[in-house]
Image (cartoon, rainbow, N blue to C red; front, side, top):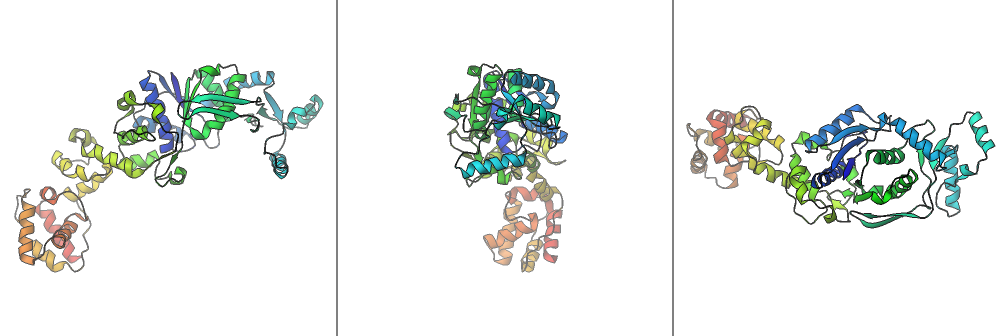
Length: 444
């Protein structure tokens, strides 16, 4: 088994890309296959080295080991050879129509109630007409002549699939400037690299039918090719995920502190009936079954993914967390705060609460209450009993109880409405900081 993940380095990866990469990696690991990273960078205007580097970094962050990367820009000689073969066999034919002419043809066919399919007028050109066009300086672009009938395959996720080719325009494989399009280069690379299983998004189903025709024209044994198309993800409300890619980009998730094992675990179970569990591909591959993925679109719900992230953090040992905690953070600090973290990045704010500085809390109308609290603040050392002893003293001095007692104290000491239990957090804050923050809140 040999699989490939073939993103275009024209932007950063998002969760839709990550799901494809994770699925390919899981299958390769489970079946002892090879996972290849191929950068489909035929779009030279939009492809950027920084995106290519980021793709490699993001795959590493997800725990995905790969062969490569292989770059299409380095393989033009291979594409030239394959194109020459298709031209010689009559599968590639030159066209000269401008975009305006093609648009006019589509409009005319639409008025006649016909599908907007290319009419293959270029195939009717005589040799003389072709030579005159070339002599006049016109550069042809090249279309692939699709066969009649259908292309069928048994999809690893969607089941039996068939694409009728006559209703599809002959695809352009080579632009007038001589550059190749993805539809062509992808096939040539898959043949040359010996790819056996192609796992990608459901939006490629029609493309698969077209590419199977190109595979066959190039002499590949299409009976040995296996395809699986994952239904596209939607957002939590069932809408297009693409509208929210900014917040679901892997770069942003890494900055926010999402754990890769939480994201991988969530993506591996997405669209199945299995409960997600955190883990990297090597952990999850033995239990992965692509046949368990539903044919229906799956909803990517950040709240569910974050719930898995919380579970991972709440169970994480200090030894695992320490390299990513602020300098000086102790095991006791981690034990106190980890149960309140959604993402690791939030630990920084709680370290400021425990051992640093926070902005003064503005608590209107609470001056008298806070003065009473300051006046009853116990001496050090602070222990887990300091908080209940202190709040009992404040209660006796002010007559307050419940939320009216606890909330202003929490806000003054931490700047937050919620957080770790103050009987555990207060000893970390210490008397000096507690006194300083109470005075600052009184003056605010």
